[in-house]
Length: 291
Image (tube, rainbow, N blue to C red; front, side):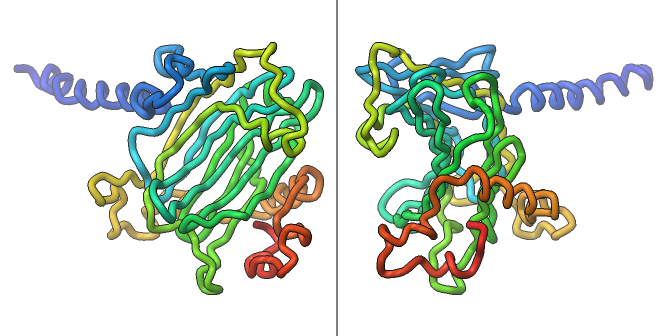
């Protein structure tokens, strides 16, 4: 066997493995299972895309094959166009069972010509009530946009097209639970919630526009997968080998962008709702401006 032939035989498996990894990254066949909807959820484009539909009989949804304890989770979405009142399109992380943890992106539909509301929330040990809502500064139905969740032991960052819109910090030192011990899967769904979704439930779903369809693509996860209680992230990794999301901080540009979004596009903040919390706001509201 010639040295040249031997080199080719050695390098070929490496090349093939690299090509497989590139093809599987963001591929719904490898990352997700459609779990409900009786055919209303469809994987498309050879695994690169996925569509969810809602009609009067049912919505649809999918979830990640694996569960994770910390990571960065990116999804591109194109939301239901036109009159989407009453519909909710979701992208969130959640554990299961009593006292579950959850990190939410929910997109609340609206009547034609009015903005979508982006609803965010954080649950820990079964307790939420930490909602912030925003109106997007673009039409989320005209093209795909990227929505991201960064989750580590110190904080949770919600991003839209890589711009931070919310940072929720760990305030366990003040006795406030933080989601850091329960592995979570990624869940996405399209469903009818016209009892509350649009203008507090005053605007109902117009089923003459059904089926409603939302589109997902470029599903990417860089996280610590948990299998049989064991994490894929090594506890012995040094800080120098840490992935960016593990110690994510906002730089000056990110802080300025966060201030811009929160000052111009926030439409609800639980830390300012004195009617809902007449007994006083949660302790973290006093500790950090950006939640």
